[in-house]
Amino acid sequence: MTQGFFSRNPSVLIFLLALSIFTLVVTVLSNAYGLDLVSTSMVKTLGKTLCLCLIALAMDLVWGYMGILSLGHFAFFGLGGYMVGMWLMYARTRDIVLSSAAGLPMTPQELNDAIATQIFGVVGTSEMPAVWAFAGSLPAQLGLVLIVPGLLALVFGWLAFRARVTGVYLSILTQAMTLALALYLFQNDSGLRGNNGLSGLQNIPGLAWAGQDRLSVWFLWASALALGLGYLAATFIVSGKFGSVMRAIRDDEARVRFLGYPVEGYKLFVFTLTALIAAIAGALYYPQAGIINPAEIAPIASIYLAVWVAIGGRGRLWGAVLGAAFVSLVSTWFTGGRAPDLNLGVYIVKWVDWWQVLLGLSFVLVTLFAPKGLSGLVDLLTGLRAPARRGAPLGPNEGALQEREAQE
Image 1: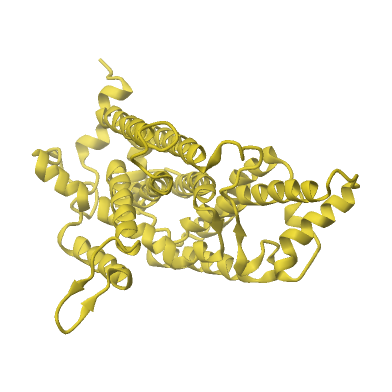
Image 2: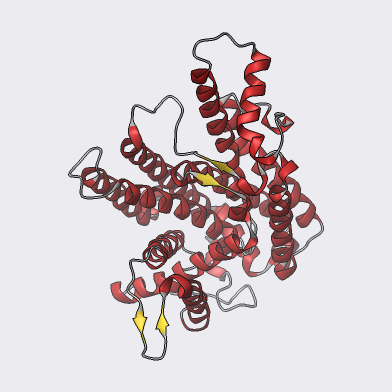
């Protein structure tokens, strides 16, 4: 008898239940809807953390299950933020211009020129760039959240996978793509305000009456919903035959290609899908952060993403979520000045300055001594063990697909 999806994947129900309880507890403790024990800034931090968990989920799909170490997924994350940020800036500036006109009639051209002057005066121009053509339409910009990163991932992936670029060379290419995009956005004539980026994104047009306390909770709910749906979809993908092919490509790509599977097609689908997930995460993240600039797309951000997944446990969806949440919250604690300085007598360790060193050291230690990351620690504490494998290995690596798994 065939088991149902949830019976085969009990971790999904556990994850969704834990996520629901977490969201409910934060809501009850929030300033807007509860006991005022959790500040609005903390609610925003938790909402942003859920968005980072979502992009970590995407990274685990493309790296942990498909074996593609992408160092460019934060580019898709940032592009999603830019697309929704353009509407937020345009609509908010439009309201400011209309209110300052004191009821005086304005032609559409005059209104457009006034908005352009307000937004782009900081970079020395008063013309609305062509890339802002749909900025006045929320549905159009929400569509572009998926279209722009999706097209970039599709074109880049098609070119790279068609040429059969793999391994470290593919990682370098994704990093080069991210660097090129960041350098372009740093220019004032990019149409996205250069180094200044887009700011004031936390002010949602038409919802000024709600206040930041309510908006932070609403975005927390939206981020939790997106993470829950993302986890459900990712589990569905990796738990079926498609997921088996993904792991087979990761373990022995040449053998899978010899068996007749369209390896490049699988890679392109997963790469593009995870780019879309990353873009959705970015579109939810930056209205909570309030600002986005090209530094957010710098290659170092994608490297951090790989570190989060490695620390959580690559190849386990809940491990990637755990790693992103852990590193994000600990980073907030260290860099926010909450961690007390460590006085060594001859030197005082200021964690604000040393946090990145500590993060890099943690990545090295996890890679050398705990390749399963935090998820391996959870296994140890709960007494879980890896399933017993039977049959001869079908790949060169110890963790390669086995005969019995291939038959199932």
